[in-house]
Length: 321
Image 1 (cartoon, rainbow, N blue to C red):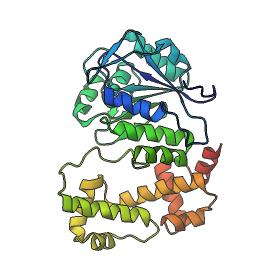
Image 2: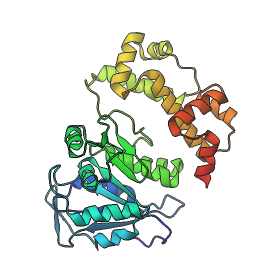
Image 3: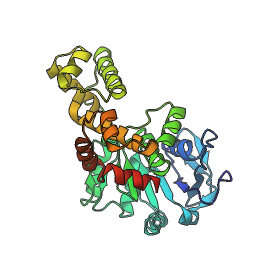
Image 4: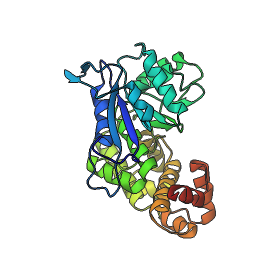
């Protein structure tokens, strides 16, 4: 718990026999380490389990939880880092704990196969959810009312969050940090992890046809250039010229690399940058539109409302509140 103030969010991560070590490590790395580089109190972190007996984990590791499931009654967030098998039964004590947490206003989040624990608790029925692409068909069969999205990194449904395969758990956890503490803090945590500060949850889980080094290098270089120069008027033709490709080849390679067309990807990047500026600056909408490349306040408002669901000023007001 590291003597964090009682006002700090309490994050509980579920341990179980057959624990997925990497997914568990993600939770501990993001939420359980001290953050002396930050000027804000960090999360309180605890490991919970149905039994306090030593639990086996991948790689020949043994884990002993410090707390039982009842401790999670106080949790602001409960993380389920994988599960011991997609068909393995989930104890009723665990499903009850998760339902109680949501009923009390808390959040629950899963990484990879941990989604099957949330499904067993009935928390995904009627909601959007994702998991590792290998498990999406099985998830659909568990509950036909789950709106399974197989080709995204993570999904935030408010009090229930799910992520794709193992490494996508890092993206989900950074998204949670960003939601709780803002973009600046999330960027600091990402830099310490040597990770991109923000990968959109809608990004594709994988590239269907892996690109050769030369082709991938050109697209990656282009993406980096555009991200640094969002205020430029990027057309498909300009992108293709910068990447040394024909427009037709660029469209194909871009979709393979990002899961989006160039213009959709560019718009999403501009909206994400707008969110960052709304949180960290006092720029007005006109200045924001020019800074991020939307050209006019009307265009910015249109795309921002379409993606985020609220106006830029409402977003800024809500974040500051």
